[in-house]
Amino acid sequence: MNRSFILYLSFAYYLFATSCSRDKDYVLDIDYNTTALVIADNDNLSVFNAGMRPIGLIEKLQAPGPFTVLVPSDAAFQKVGMDSKSIQLLSTQNLSNLMLYHIIDGTYRLDNLPFLFNQEIKSQRGKLYVTHWIKERDTILTINGARILNQRMTTSNGLIHVIDRVLEPFKHERLNDAISDDNNLTFFKEALRSSGLEPLLNREGEYTVFAPNNTAMKANGFNSIQQIHDTDPELLKSFIRYHIADTRRFVYDYILTTDKTNISQQRMLDGYNCRINLLPDYWAPGSFLGITLQGPGNLSPISVAKQDVLTGNGILHTINGILKPTR
Image 1 (cartoon, rainbow, N blue to C red):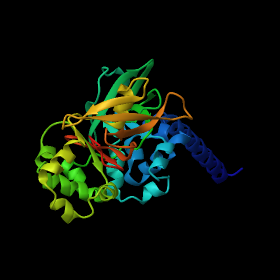
Image 2: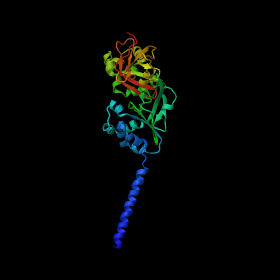
Image 3: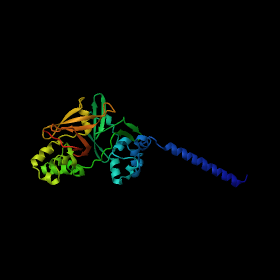
Image 4: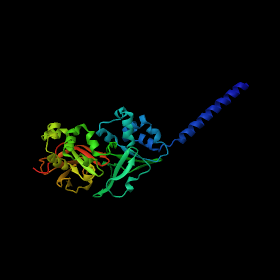
């Protein structure tokens, strides 16, 4: 056997041995328990996983962190019409705002928080409010009114909590701005302005607004912006004050505080009470789908069209009717 051939075999063996060693070291160096890879490995979190790719979150959530990630389940994304393809069609800015609102820097063991309502923490895109409460024998955690579905999953660089709704990114510091930003609330916005109560919702404080949408306003005699503008401001003021509560309440807060009758009362700014009815989920005994509202003057309950829009001074809910304190 000539010398050149022996050298060739020796070099080939060296390359083979080196490449095998490197492959082995590379595999051993991968941490499969990072937050990014745990999410990717969970079939029920595929939409959130798809949203991570276009904005570089997979790499970020493999970094040391630590991070606490609030991951909506695939069923939660389906409720807002999103799947693994459509979420990637969002603009980079909108996708970033959505995804980063669900990520908190640091390790937050939310089940270790005190038993209190709406404790403020901050995500990478704004405020979040966590409620830790006991209803009957169940300990319940909610974030912005979305329920945490499981015990926390511990990863090598943080924690994962799976939630039952997609959180709408924090966008407005004031309720007035949130109302102005919703094209379905232009009639209510004019009523608010013409009543002189607009400054109220620009103040610091905690308010919950149940705003009738444009369809509801028209169905109850407010047929145009001009007609609302021409209405007696005192009448509009009474109308508006029965749609605002002097407290911050997500829909699930009512579910947590209502007893076995499934009925509670919310005192409004005008001093009258509004009845809150829980909607049972008959497919899941003990669970609830949401709430309806009913004033003494309403012949039937009013449903919630859009819930839990968080602002710096309260929460906005859009409703499908006008609340009436008297017949």
